[in-house]
Image: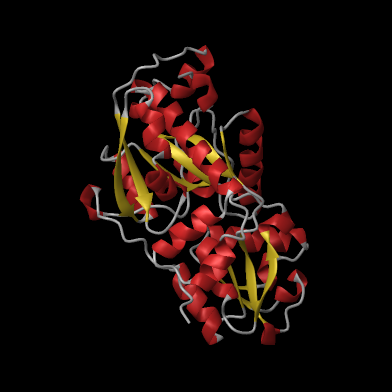
Length: 342
């Protein structure tokens, strides 16, 4: 039985690197800040012949689905623009490629958003995938005697790196059950696929993880889902980011990319078979795909005041968890894409 996620086979683009698991936002690069552009309410011209260079991660994602369906391409074409797909990238490589000016768009996690905000960054968040959180959670070995979150005390729980999505999932669950983090033996395993293997071999009693890895862990014999982010109200959403320079020069194109992604997300919500077929075509095993397409696919939303307030709640959690000392100023790290016109 294949348990681990398969890597999407796409031609390598920019420097042969890859992208998609966690999502970033970011901060000042040039102080000609785009949030200020949004505040003016100015509407850019409908015509924009820019080429939007998108970096995607390995595996199936909203970016790759939008590539296959031409959702982003069609939206850009409607204003005279076009898209160039680059990847696959590893998440960190994607952010670095964007900062180096080799791509214009990519994704990252809310956690990365806060890290980017701590220092000057040329990346700006323009959209989020808001979902229930049922795609992230904790899977336990049945023999470990873990029936509730409180039972994690004294157990070995694998996460990825310190302050990562995996540790956030674990800490959010512990907080919801008033269990001190010091009562749990947190095991850091950088590669999340290795975390799945550690659970399968019995090296750990539980695994806190996300997406395909969460589904893979559930395919291990004699395991059970203990809890999910949907049950703990944790919001580790994915974010879409654009370089500040591209946003300043081509606001209408950023709005078009947002429209394409939002349209693709709507299609996926309406017909889960679209994602199922794409994942099977990417070589993912059918039993894994069955689980993944059962997750809430979410909706693509603009980062308005309401969404930003929800993101800040996650930031406040990370401060409580000791992942960071304080919540950074996010005001220059995002743009409300609905204010861009186009």
